[in-house]
Length: 297
Image (cartoon, rainbow, N blue to C red):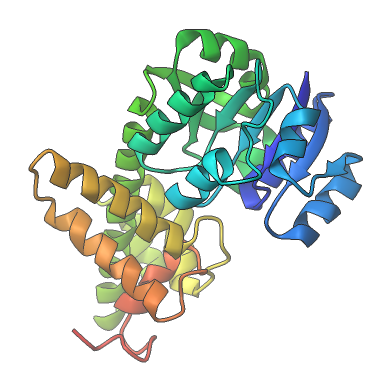
């Protein structure tokens, strides 16, 4: 199969590299960042498409890894150039964390064009994308899933079919909502520990052996202490994803105060120019004297 990629940021580029390593024929890449596209195309020996329709023409299967709902709608239904030009019999595998309803919209658009789509939501980070160890949750028709499965197995260590279009996106929204809440809680715990003069290495070790333990402690705890916020999952994306989950809660009449507070913290980071820090950067808001606005409430 010829495989194309639309959206080659941290995740998309490393998925393309992984499939190239596994002897798949990556034929075209596209990104609004033209230099990123040309650089990756040179590395992989494929075309740096200037148009979305060119990716479709050059590929049997097209992965999309874009930023948000608006970007997703644009690549599939934008006026003029879009991915559904002459798309009959193509398969689109959509990996971005976006609103469930947009995945449903995309499935309807692709069906109308004689193509198929599958959401393949990723609950992993950059190293897993490169190593082919993503945790993938898929939604769509079972036919589309079976067609995509041989490729998805090469980029994942765990592959789960959740159900119809939109269902996997709901699960992914909840995964990120809880992860973000855990991250904010850890930052507050370590921030208070630091303000009380406690040894943070000791405190992290105690957390790891008690009810304060979490996966986030393992991935972010030391980074929070050392102020190392190299970006694996940005604060801006955390704000967006918590927003998706909070909107879902409002749609079903639930009030989630922790989700709302966490969303607001990450939105605050973005507003203050910290949106491209890793999600661990939320500690900059909770540790005393770290941030110029850390005392503001």
